[in-house]
Image (cartoon, rainbow, N blue to C red; front, side, top):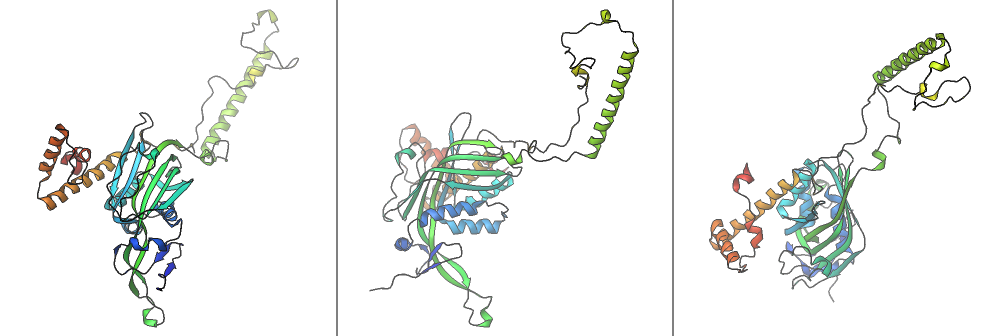
Length: 392
């Protein structure tokens, strides 16, 4: 009887299977991963997506994508318009995910994290297309065509995504997600055996197999933007008032005290003639015999207004999609470049130019034909903007 494949665990607790003899898809090792390993992979992806204080340099982003995605993976994000309640879908290929993270960082997103509710995970046959999503998902846009090499499916209808802006405001999205995963082998560097002193800092190459995402979709069902209570400083934390403001307040108080003293002395010097005193409708009775009216101790109507630097964080400039005003435009550019890449691949494989492909799809739309021999969606290709909008 053959020995079971060797299984090792790295410092993060992620299971690694070091038994493959080639890089690429390795669905035969799906049984080597314990139950809930696919769910842990999806959760770990969000924990490393945009953690607080992370550096979004090109090296980290490339390493993140290489760790969690297969080369032909698709990241799908479905945003919700809070006014029209219409959904907008963005598909990012493997090469576009780093640009998406970088765009979020450049548009005042400090961190992103996710909280998962009840999650379902099950296995499927890698030789067949993955099973369709549950009925609740069928109202969304169709998934990309995947013919096989999917061994794990993770789904949840209870997922909350928190995006924290650099000024403290947060965007909270409630939705559901679906992830398709598969074992994939890559060549990685590992520390060389330390038995030889000369190999203390040396590296060796080895084949590592781990579960990676082939398709990940997050669909927004509801969203809200708010600022945490601990950042609302007024009435919660003490506020330091500038010395100049304190000086102005004291000077104003002295000025008002002198004015009240002068008015009081002038009033006492006048003869007591009650018949000439007229009580206004807004005056209040004296609080005690011989006492002054309460309104005389209150501030005058022309009281000066003193201002101090506000510690309340201003609401970020966002649009109805709960994103920065520039972000959807940048996402459209990345998505359009991906579509242009598909046209170039058709030209290389079939010898047909991009304009010829678009003309063919236009004719199919007019005649009601949906022949998709190239594997591309008609609506996807027809929405490519003019080149001058892409490269200006």
